[in-house]
Amino acid sequence: MSSALTIRNLTSRPVELKSYEYHATTPSLSRGGMTNITHNVTSLFRNATTSASPVTEPTTTFVHQDVSIRVEPFESLQTDIKSQNPNETLHFTFEIEGEKHKLDTPTPTSKSTTLQPLSENPCFNYTAVHLLEHSHLTLYFSAHLSSWMRSLKDDTPLSALSIPGTHNSPTCHRALPSVRCQATSPPEQLDNGVRFFDIRVQPESPLDPTKDGLALVHGVFPISLTGTKYLRDLVQEVYAFLDQNPSETLIMSLKREGTGDATDAQLSRILKDHYAGDPNRWFTAPRIPYLGEARGKIVLIRRFGLDESLKHEWGGAGWGIDAENWADNTPNATCPSGDICVQDFYEVMEEVNIEKKIQYSQEHLERAAKCVCTLPEQHGVPANPPPKQPFFINFLTASNFWKVGCWPEKIAAKLNPAIVDYLCRKHNEYDGAAPQAGDGSTGIVVCDWVGYKGDWDLVRCIVGMNAKLELRERDS
Image (tube, rainbow, N blue to C red):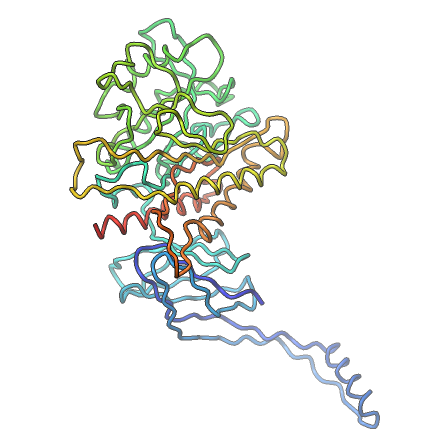
């Protein structure tokens, strides 16, 4: 029999479990079992005789139990509900402000499932993640992943949000080992909630200012074995998504990599002159914006130095959010600008070191969770610059080209489920007596191979962590 079920409510409204149902099976009693019983009885009563008993078939009994188990917002509560068989389906009925929803779990295809409303035109939609190995059920609001930012206010600092991201985002093509990092295309990532892209480019004609060619690369390698892929096409895909979903924004981190003699200064001029010059499409101020300023736009984080002419942009403050001096291979470092606090430990040389990477990733989630963003009293986009709360950027990524077990997809297969588990059971945990002071944000969580075989649970968990911030906004 499994351990007692724990229910965690990661939403801003109380949830009450009203009933649960399951089919209890009584195991069959074989003839061999009866023979053994007969032998034992005979040994006690030697003069007694017994006759053979028929084999009994297993029986199934339907069990329905009415309960009243209330789980407050952001609370975890252990119940006395135990499953006889971890593979059997449990049928739960939850009530949220008078509205009932049904949940059947576990499902055969994934850990997450959507609760089914038992009334027409429901006000609430919920998703559950059931971690069978821990007998743990976590409830999140069901966000429309293509437009999940819509429910957040314009005056929310972008750095206060829990944001799913991807590492080497366009590397979904057939490529050399360790070059490919993604299972799905950038448009599919956007449709499923990803709002941070990590992009590496190589200028093709850096000496000709009329040319805009920026090839997508990963290190010194092209991202595809079937032909060069270009930033221009990727940007057009992002524009198309933002046009369809104007409530959203995309944070794009750009870095120069590849071969050749191009410089950061040349890259910065190409981007300014040919890509990011339109203020209706790009946010290039050297500060973290409020969400209202960024909706419908690409927010530029630059991991490159600037041409001298661009250092005078924005009243001499520079151009783009400054991440030029990004610490290499670090478990925790803040860029000199103060706008970026990053965990980017990537040298996992042996499979045993994956546990160290998981530890660093969890520790960075804890740092982000402790922050409390300042919410302006007025609504709309304020005139003053937002408070200095950095982007916590947390890379769940690592690789070792020479070790098959440390290729990106192998590490992601261990790291992604570990982070789902952590977010569901431990992130910003509330024990009922001492609630965590922070907003419970995850920061920007940068993933490899998210969406593989349709599994977007990690993205759903990250987006779901915005609930505490939404509650503060609702009550402000």
